[in-house]
Length: 481
Ligand code: TXE
Image (cartoon, rainbow, N blue to C red; front, side, top):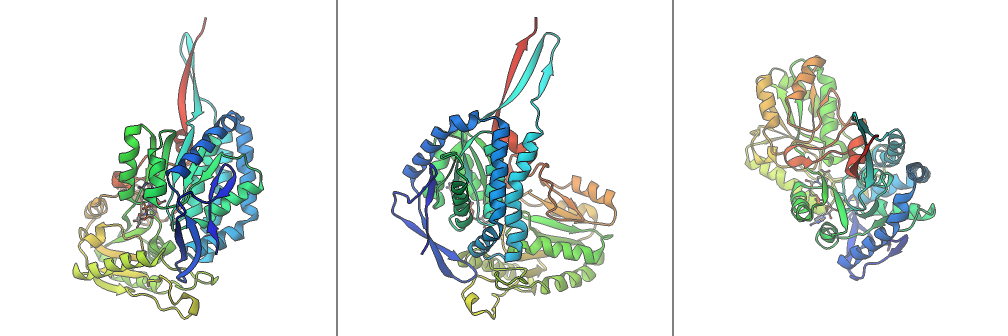
């Protein structure tokens, strides 16, 4: 049985707690490892290592740190298939998705920030009698806390800009999905990455995450996860004046206007709803459709949803795997029950999937589910389910569609489907979210700002926003003779 150890000062070691958490493959229900559950002493050890490494790492020239990012990307590239297989086993996501999205993007995150950082110039503001030079300095030791839905993808999205700006890191991956972070640490060891610059502490939120938030020498926290946990992060870190980036939950809408190309929109809506079993914070879990085209669109949508190949994540053909855990499956199922109580009707799905493959008999699989007939303000339509369940609603006109889209505490993302691109763009401007897509979904340019409004988060990641978050800007004003 594999033991997942912390990675501190370039070495793998168990927590002094002596406690372990079971690591389960959610597609099989099998125990695949034991994770060390860290405590505040482990976090202290990791902070000490990160502090010791800070001087030499932050003194490197930026081109030297960029070279390290490229070296890490090369090393990840050489282990791409292993990363995908490991991520699929840990999360229950299809191997094809793990290759296309998780493994690819983890590599791209390093390549992108290497290239992007190389193009940055220091800002300068000239006065009649002085010149202001703006510098970005490292913050110091930073804390990265990440969730289970896109484990290595989201962790590397934070690691790459934090490293390139000269910081050292204490990271805590989700206790549900520690394997690729562990693999990443072993890759760093193989390439002789400087010790102590990157450290991992594994474990539960309250025992291993909370001490990161509370530690006075960790100067910034970048967190991706649930909105409720985000509140705890903000409440703990704010009085210590830490820099905070919070990427939280969503209840995103997919809006189908009356002039949409319906087959394309139905494909897009199904993809937005069920990618990664609906466990992407950007997933479109509410579909709003103009009532004049609702019947035709619903038929097309249900055909798309019913054609999704649900099955063994190891099978190359599989398009949708399990959800993250049996406990999460039960939570998602409770929303299907709630929907029925709230007057909704199950248009397709709603049941546990019975797979023919023997090894998946105890897996956490739910059929992709579409629910109609619910009020837009019902609990099912307003609370984040984070599973393969979407609700379908109709609207009478565009104004009502905007009102319905905005009638949620969240504001992360959304997509609108129309053949009139200008109409789509105008519509998108009226939506209270961080990102809107017109006739597409999850189409990402890593230079753009990424993040939520309302209860979906604070701050932006991506391109210059990530570089700014992971640095302190200072101004030096030099008086000219
Ligand atoms: O997230 P958590 P979970 C949403 C989604 C999901 C819900 C809960 O709705 O159902 O969040 O998922 C660490 N101090 N999203 O339980 O609990 C925790 O160990 C410090 C949306 O995974 O927020 C993990 O590493 N850290 C999201 C990380 O926080 C703490 C993706 C996230 O865990 C902590 C995933 C504490 N007190 C879930 N408590 C998105 N927007 O992408 C927990 N953690």
